[in-house]
Length: 372
Image 1 (cartoon, rainbow, N blue to C red):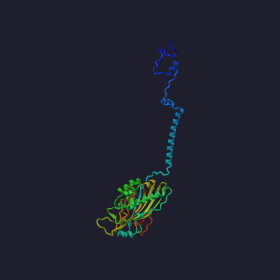
Image 2: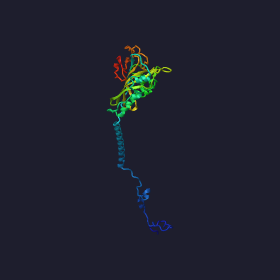
Image 3: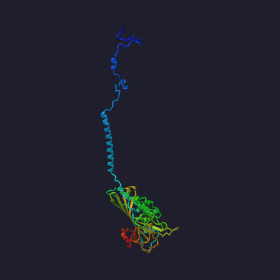
């Protein structure tokens, strides 16, 4: 009879030695009630970590949207701050101002008798321009002081730009007798470029397209410089024309020694003087000052000796040594003609002293005597 602890088929063959769990027996109900659990690698290594990662709770899911909203708000605040600082820029924003067309008045000055001649040196050193400086040294800048809206450096840059324009348009031999225009045109505001180009290519006596309003020019087929030293004398002044614009006024007299453009050798005493007085009004806004350019608002020019009938829109027509003005007056104006009206003006060249006489306005140029 078998015992209760032995299986029906008899006791097992314990060839491997004493079995220490032999007396331990689990009934069927205990086995069925047992809970099976597979431990993770960390648990099997003794770390006793959880086998399955816990899913985030409600609190965690709520924190993530809040973080996103905070990031969006931070970006929006940064954008608003950038816009605010842009409007609060300490550097003034350039004002979009268009340059006006140049208004020109060119008046020939006729001599009362024959044009005196001589050597260029004797005429320049013994004539009315004897005390005047030579070349660019005759164009002196005034003392520079800041204005209400422009700094010292901005005023100085504006005056330097105006001086460069005067040098290029009145003293450069390539411009005066060579027909070169680029040194002058590159200093102009782009809004005046088209008007300047038309004045050079198709000059007209309409008060806007006279080449001699922009620069001093002689016909190289008729005259040439007898001496490269050109005398210059005058003043520069400046003032604010608005919160964003400087106005500079130049009033200078330029004296040239000329002779006929003839082939072969020239007579040493065949030179004569020609005088040009230019009163120019310039406007420069902040962008013009920064880019070294300007707007020529008006040009009032007196030049002689010339005949009153001379056409000076494309080039000045000097009377040389021994020459005499013709008896004809200025070209007439037909009030019945169509197109842009023009009025010819002329003055009389009368030099009485080496000092510069005050310049009278355009209306005074109709007087029978006018000093350059």
